[in-house]
Amino acid sequence: MRPSAHVRVAVDLRRVRTNAQAIRQLTGVPLIAVVKADAYGLGAERTTLTLADLVDRFCVFSPDEAIRIDLWQRTGKPALAIGPPATLDPTDYVAHHIHPAVSTAQQAAALRSARPVVCVDTGQQRFACPMENVAETFDQGHCDEAYTHAATLQQVQMLQDAVAHRRARLHAAGSSLLNEPAAWLDAVRPGLALYRGSVRVSTQLVENRKSTGPAGYSGFTAPYHGVILAGYSNGLKAGPCLVNGHPSRILEVGMQSAFVETQPTDRAGDEVILLGDSISEQHIASAWNTSPHECLVRLTSLGVREYIE
Image (cartoon, rainbow, N blue to C red; front, side, top):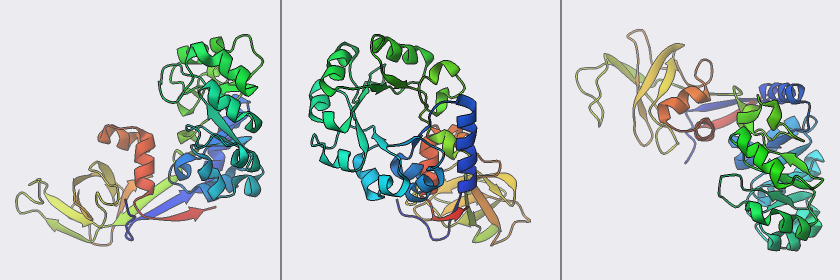
């Protein structure tokens, strides 16, 4: 995916801070901020600096994500790398204050000096430690922390049961369980909840016209239609939008342009909102039949980022 020079991605870092402050106030437990995938497309370098004084740790997928932006040196906060270990050599983990997530006793033993964290499988079945191997993995890594990717309170309980007889810090709640006090445990690990409402993606109509029959490659019909300069090569899909503040929809997406339903009063140069104002990540996710996480990552990649601080 390549960004379109005709799309503006405005990232409101003030909103990111406000979201983080609200999560801390709600839960009262340490906050591990998920900044993997370039902070869901908002830009990890700027986002981590914005959050550094509000969070206890950061969460990345691979150690390279933390090393690339000098996360420890710039923020003074350690990181948890939740992807499968990139290497069983602990050197880089230790040097950059990154704790690797481990799912086997072999990984835990090899990375012991990096203070590994056990990822417990409570149903996701993806690079996580089966219940029957949790005790051995803890022992081999001298571990004192475990977590799981939980979507339900039942999975939270499974994590607690897996380490019931050990003194260990536990965390299970991502964004979807922040409203469940029973899921907060010893820390929360939000991603989307930090970024919700902080991004506004906009572009402009380059033309507007009255339709004279079926249009585009798909032969769509609409009384009036306009064109924007963003397409599927930039990550755009058909779905809701706003044109001059009124609800509208993207009718057909081409490689570098798309058709938008318009009104007769719309003109070339008028603003089209692809995310933001009354168009939320969840609103788009429903239209795209996907997750709001995917919508946010796709839409932040559409254009050139600008920051509001």
